[in-house]
Amino acid sequence: MNRRYFLMGSAAATATRVVKARQSPNDTVRVAVIGCGGRGNSHMGAWTNMPNVQLAALVDVDDSHSERFIGSLQKRGKQPVPTFRDIRKVLDDKNIDAVSIASPNHWHALQTIWACQAGKDVYVEKPATHNVFESRQIVAAARKYNRMVQMGSQSRSSAALQEAVQRLKSGEFGEIYHARALCFKARNTIGKTPPSPVPPGVDYDMWCGPAPVRPFTKNRFHYNWHWFWDTGNGDLGNQGIHEVDIAYWGSGWKHPTKVTAAGGKYMFDDDQETPNTILASLEFVVDGKPKLMTFDTRHWYNNHEAGIGGERAGNTIGNIFYGSKGYLVIDGYNKYYSFMDRDGKPGPANNSRDNHFENFISGVRSRKREDLTAEIEQGAWSCVLMHLANVSYRVGRTLHWDEKTWSVKNDAEANKLLTREYRGQYVVPKNV
Image (cartoon, rainbow, N blue to C red; front, side, top):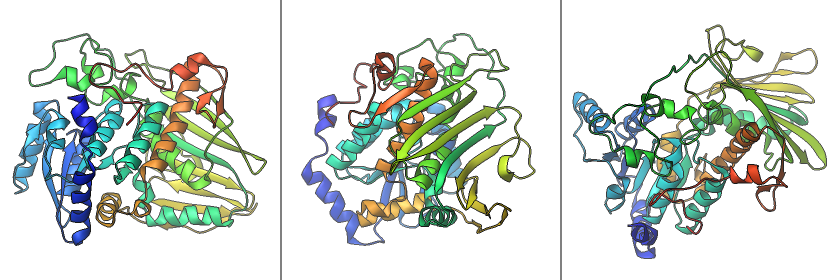
């Protein structure tokens, strides 16, 4: 089975799909959605409401999820589509052009690599990887099999935020010295749930996939898998990765020299393993000058820094870029405003929706990587920055990053956390 999927990305199959994609902007692109949870619903909605795009199949290890999606299609007057538990059934179908991955984090890289090997283009939700090793492999697969691969960082397709980043890089705000990513969400406790039987209609072994098979509990399953290291990356890798990506995009700083993170589980006594509060500092040297990037993730009660989130209670999701001539604020996914000089007079501002799903389809048609606003090389590096912050938190000390070897200097414990022990047939390959 594994060998078969390593060999599926043949030159002949790839060439056929490339020719088909180039024939006409009106050719139908057939997309399969992998993962029928919350984000999967957004994927399904996109592919069923876009001209010349067809939802071709649904994949989920929980039959009740697939059934709910089919019911939703029928209520909207849409035709039902085939459903599967195993993504490899979809990869066998030569009539499917792309897969749209909204599965849990620990599956993202392997499903993307399998899809690239099968000659499919890929839209993969954030974070595109579960660890640093996977970030290298997912890009290698996209390049080797000449696939269009996009990470689900919607802000990259916002005209307003594209304008904001252009202003930052043009020097309008002077020298940018500090990029902040803020993820303050009013999340409640997940409580404690004991081991219980696997629900009927669930392939739990396949759900675990590359991760160890732990005793089934409701907290380790739908959505709350985010808060366990086996399957998720905490809120820094859930909501926070959007803001991490914007910090990287707006600053352009890539390899940090030092990464330090501190935090913990505060307030709640529950099953969650990942921290609900974490503050990470990443230090860079750019053209001989020091730079600082910080990720600030908090739960429960929060203030609205720099006005992000307005007056509504609870969430402060965005970014702040500090420069020598002023500072620029990203509020959410599609809005920015700014303040200039020491007196803080209002500067440029804009607000617009994104067209991220549409952007992916445009790239599938053009076959030009530069047309993708969140092409996987950019998305995978944002993931690396997030992963390094989490590793620093887990080992409890500063990491000294070696950009030449993609490793932490003199720290075997930290380097072990840059990858994982894979299981059985669910191995992310060293040679894609």
